[in-house]
Length: 204
Image: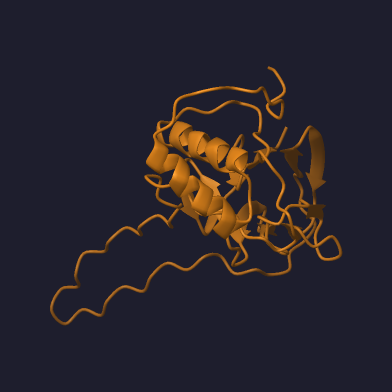
């Protein structure tokens, strides 16, 4: 598969009011027109369930550290957390059921089966209780130098022989199957997205 970072000059017809709107957005968000157009195309492709197997890198790096990812272009709503399943109302005299909480983070013995993370052509072995991913190089096990990535974006937790991925209150979140999630058990072949960065996990 070709290099997804390669750019080629294109020409197309654009409605004048859209172009004027995007010019305002480039000034407000501090990014280029190329970045916004590429983001609009990427969001539309993903909304139609079109994607490439290889990870798509950002069209343009942010101009300054800490710059948050621009919101989705008009017509493409930003990722929102999946709506939790609704519980049936309790019967008369019955106490309401407590909501299920994510598994607590607790110290555990060394994992018997390591988990491997495939990222940007590299293979990372995860064999510890907490594997932190983020922008801050001094506090992460995997560093992604991009202003759209939070300093401590997410972590892979090992507990009782099972691995989980958990959002650490990041700005742009974790995406799985087109939806933003807070936490999930990591199963064989699971692929998550941090903005445009693909994280694929395997036990093999």
